[in-house]
Length: 86
Image 1 (tube, rainbow, N blue to C red):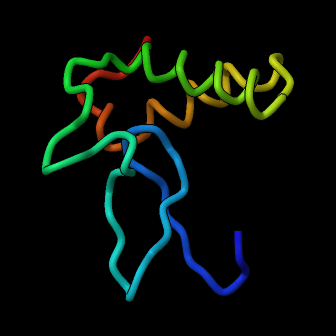
Image 2 (image 1 turned 60 degrees about the vertical axis):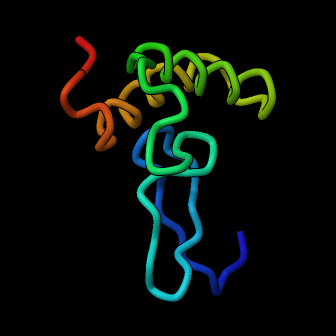
């Protein structure tokens, strides 16, 4: 990420979103389109699994560190506040 740019996190998946002209979106292009969630019936557990798998398989993050951190991060995002994991 460039040093002079500001970022916030998607409130569904945690992906960095660039803040443009002092405004930021709450959700990234992969989670939100045309004013609604792309996968409205997705459960928090499904998002946690999706992001954990992406980080392990595509980004080569160590498995032992990913799962707990992703669960903690995703569960704290706005979209999932009403459907927290156990």
